[in-house]
Length: 220
Image 1 (cartoon, rainbow, N blue to C red):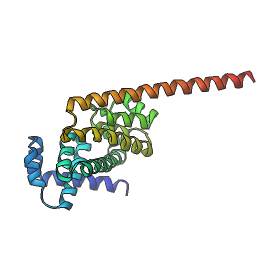
Image 2 (image 1 turned 90 degrees about the vertical axis):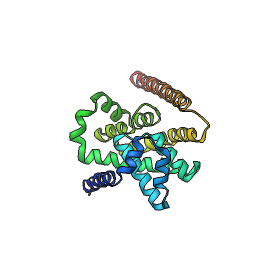
Image 3 (image 1 turned 180 degrees about the vertical axis):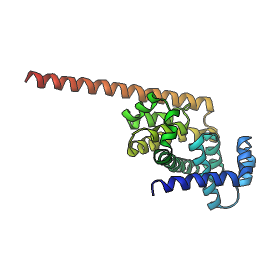
Image 4 (image 1 turned 90 degrees about the horizontal axis):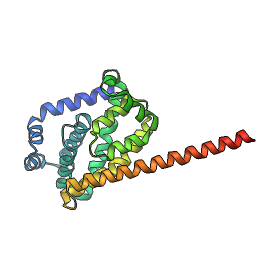
């Protein structure tokens, strides 16, 4: 069953691409108005199409994430558009994670640097979280690196949920007119740097405590 589901997922994505060439052409051209007109049919259809677009984005990162969030914002409003973007991103990330882990791990192992894979494996949630909020890391790269490595699904899920919660909120403010793309990227870089600093301080403090306990045990 674990292998059948990823195969069905790949078939579904492939079928969607073949059956929606007009939509994909509009996405490639960044024709936002054309996309909205084409999608503006019924609620279930909108939800299904936007979910599949997010899955494609998490698989290949050929669709700008900001464009998908802007589409959801225009279709569903700020609050529901933000929540739907966040929810579909989690579903998409989980699907890609399992497809890579159970179907494509041998094929993709040579495509990801061993150093990156070791960092994700060793630190678990943190690299996934940082990969989600850092604006220059492709979502597909985080999914593939996590699927290839031995990072636990629980850590992958937590890092994805928390990271996308922050990152998508910042992106959702752009179509709302509160911030520009440059300001959003600056904010996320600052947040990423702050999280890294906190993590390093935590590691140093923890290491010092362990060393102190070991010295006390040796003295006793």
